[in-house]
Figure 1 (spheres, each protein chain N blue to C red):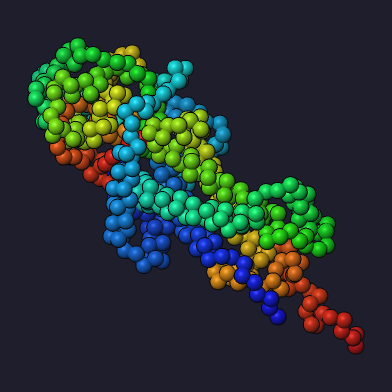
Figure 2 (figure 1 turned 90 degrees about the vertical axis):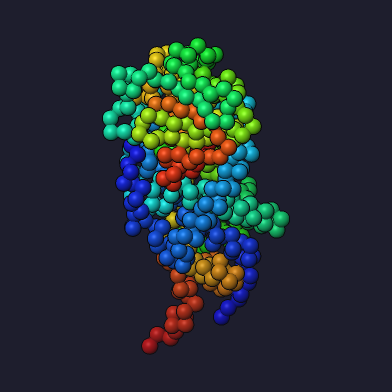
Length: 246
Length: 236
């Protein structure tokens, strides 16, 4: 039983996977650069917002081998990230798909319904469009974080030449902190994203590779919560139908 | 500032780089080619964006790093100019100039000078504020009368073979100084005495300390850290 629909345009699929590569390299090389001075305080000053001030990131999470190498990777790959991001945003705008991502009135109410459903307070999966509102909000937040990361990145790459961008973040030190913190939140959301794909909707992996999606397998159709009804709703299994008790 | 030379040689085997390059079937040479290409293009963009009237504006109320300003040199001990061994310290200005100069510290201090509170941006990621007093490189260039062949300038030191060459636009920036004073005192030996290059428009490693020679040149001349893999341009 299949009800196939084209869920993701090739531009979305392409930019999604290019983004995976670009973000892994950018985050890895960024953390290697960070390790050269794993703190936000200026020499002789204190920085209260980072509880791990002075602690390096484990080497296995970093990319580029050493500070200079990581800088070369970071400053090369940033153009891939930016070009890819612009292509995606341009597509989203021209193709009208920003409507599936943009916040709208009623999102808060919908979010409460989704949380109720995940907490077993509500029985049936709310029907909320291409993405449920929690998913949609996470994707939108990732876009906003991407913009913040690019701007704060330019701010610390050229704090004099592009000083007007640095000034948006107060100064170099704060821009560097924002750049790092936004990256940390983005990676956290990406981890939650991957977790939810496998815990709630593994069938969507296909839609991000070939574009096709089987509606019968959607979380709404399966009434799926994390790790619940992964293989379909219980009631639809043949052996579970009103079989005569013998 | 704790540069560790061993760090340059150690490419962590456990780092993602190996795994990723292996997964892509790319060999390090093609990656190096890509990175070189990106560095050249970035330098073009950075030079294009560079403006002489774009200044580092540090608030007047900003705290100076003072004694916490990191000290750094490549020699085993603090390089100190000993006149009994090396004779009087002189700053030689030569190369593509009409009038080569040989300035004692007194000569240098007689030239028009400025005092500015600016940032020092280290490649490692920190920045520190200090108040620098010195002569603008652009004023030195004017006094020496640079010729049309001066497209680059090399700043050389007596700290081993430390030197870094610059593009002219960055050297001629009004905030690029040959500094002999720091925080209202004469420059100390840990910070490059008798004189050093200081500018907020370049990363720290481009700012040669323990200065001895300023050579205007038609071609770039690399540098101590640039030759070891850091970006030659090193602009901010």
